[in-house]
Length: 452
Image 1 (cartoon, rainbow, N blue to C red):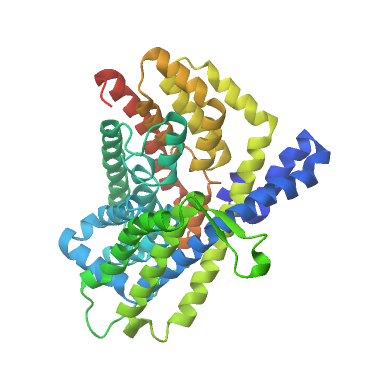
Image 2 (image 1 turned 90 degrees about the vertical axis):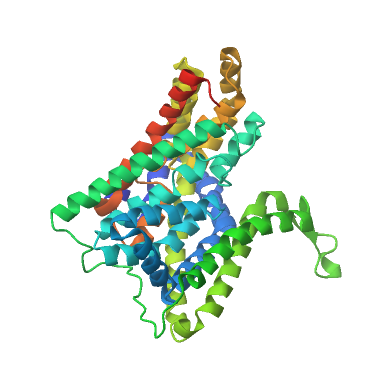
């Protein structure tokens, strides 16, 4: 965390930190753990998710150079006014992620809008990461009922629930996060304005300002985003019905004895997002061809470079989390948390701590529930607590302290926006505290009202 905060590359230092811990535990285990665990997890992450990073980066770049970002920002500014720029960016991120777009993709897609709107409104650029984090990393990730993000799906496997578990508590938690988060960001904006601080100059990774010969209608500019959101939903059903649970393919007679076999259920959501992004890219190329022509070559190079950096940063942190979870000290932490008597508070703190240690919401949640779900269930049954409440608390807790400086999504967000931990992490951490507090607000509401 210290190394990440000070701006050093986690691609270099995350394996050093993880393997340093292994060295102190068992020196002879360092080479096997590096090759058999760290690199396996790193490569496995890239195998699954790098196409999403790549397509998301290309989509975001095309939205930028087509002039669509500026068109949407101008329309939003006209309706809401420049004083509500932050709310607009939070809502754009929320719509994308609740529609099923990966939060990593949302970062690439929202950033061009945020940079343009913050520049026009003269809001400090350093506030962009916290604003995007509130819209994409919080209530639509694991709190709002029905969200398709993986952090809301994982608990259903253990508690035999569904994505709409505890809808009342989820809505209460979402309203708390949105209201308090917006209040904090607006306070930061007003403080900067009083100090005479504007958007600033000399920034890196700045979206290209595109001047168009003719105005672009905001509905035309919004169409690619709608195509991504709707396409993701549609493709989920199409892929499931077309392939079933498993697909085996032999392209030649020689392959018949050893066909390529894929567990489609495990990758349906990924395929759907990739297909939706391809549709969004094609729509942007067609609708914005006048402005994209002549800029695509350089723009795509920048997008590919950005996706490589973001993907490797996150994959490295994924490998780091796997190594840390394998250490004996990790079990000591998880076992030590068992002494908390209240089942919901126990679950919330346990999931939160493990997600923070691994730097991953989904990673910490998976580890916690795989090891301790039976204990949580027994405690809840003894106290008469519905499984739906366990689901919502576990899901929300995973997205609390997971966003510490070494979190892959945080590092991706800062890399895409061209800002450092020192410049912008303070606001991300403030949103993290709001998100963490929301779990305990929901627990209190349940005990006070019995609402689920």
